[in-house]
Amino acid sequence: AEIRRSVKQLVDETKAPKSADQLLATYSGREEELVSHLNNMKAKQSKGNEIRSLVEKTNAPKGADELMAAYAGREDELLSHLKKMEAKQDQKAEIVSLVAATSPGKSAEELLAAYAGREEELIKNLKKMQASQMRASQLDLKKESIRNLVDEIALPKSADVLLSTYEGREDELLNNLTKMKSTQELKSSQRASVRSLVDEMKPGKSAEELLATYEGREGELVRNLEKMKSKQELKSSKQASVRTLVDDTNPGKSAEELLALYDGREDELIKNLEKMKSKQERES
Image (cartoon, rainbow, N blue to C red):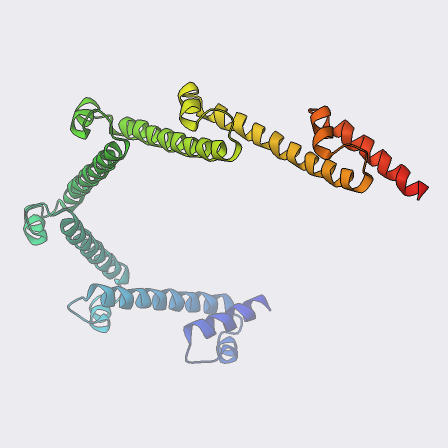
């Protein structure tokens, strides 16, 4: 049963001129021989397909049928020749591409003639040239970024002076300038926040006076002003609650008088007024 399945599968794959049943009847008792013949046919067809594919890909001067006829029984030799031709064409295509990318001063054809039989060496040299050019291009981009950062930061030294000092260490210079720019941007943002907070709260000193006092500690100043703002907002909210409760309870003193008496103890005042309000509501 297993041999029958193998025969049917091989007949389908090889498109044998006779059916599986016909072949099995002819080879009755010699089924293994039949399987061997079919496997050989399959291998030959596979080589034929590979040859046709390589002939088409390499644009060989002769057709696949003509070559297979000339190399009948020597298909492996033909395949070897075609694969070498393919490899050589691939090398040439890679060299043409590298020459176009690197512009070495000679054409691809001139280099191929000069390096005939040493194409691998030529490819290696062109790749080295390409890598060197890419590094030079990356360095140019870094230098451009450094010049832009120097202009933005307004450093006392020129970009040329810094590039000369950091020659070979451009990455370090670029990193330092990027950090410096970030620090400047943060400081500028913090100073803007200080001015806005001072305008809102009127702390008694101008924004410029506070910034001079907290030079280099702008973040700390912002945090202090934000805390002050939060306290003011909370106090303002409590004062509003007091005024509402005074309107509701009429305790005998004005809200302003009570707020002056309970300055810093607004929570206590609110609690007392809420008790008074609750008592009044029960009595009514």
